[in-house]
Image (cartoon, rainbow, N blue to C red; front, side, top):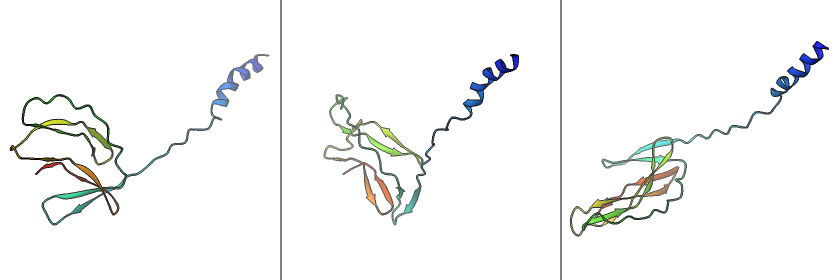
Length: 116
C-alpha cells in the first residue's frame, strides 16, 4: 500500500518531463559597412525598418524652430525609435530635409536628416 501511494505521488512529476518544449526561433540580422568616396560611410542593414510611428507634434518652443520627425535608428542589432523634436533653424532660409531609410542592393541604408 505504501509503495503504490509513493508511485501515485511521483507519477505527476515523471510526466512533467514528457511535455514538448516550446519552439524557439532565432533570427540573425547582418550588417555590412560600405565605405563611400566621401567622408561618410553607409551601414547596410539586411532587415527592413519597422513602419514609421505617427507622433503628435508639440507646440514650438519659439520662433525659428523646426519640427524634426521621429525615426528608427539602427543600433547594430535592432531598431530603436528616436522621437521627433524641435530644432533651432541655423539660418532664416534653412530647410530641414528629414532622414529616411533607402532600399539598396543587399538591404537598407539610413540617409541622415540635414539642413539645406
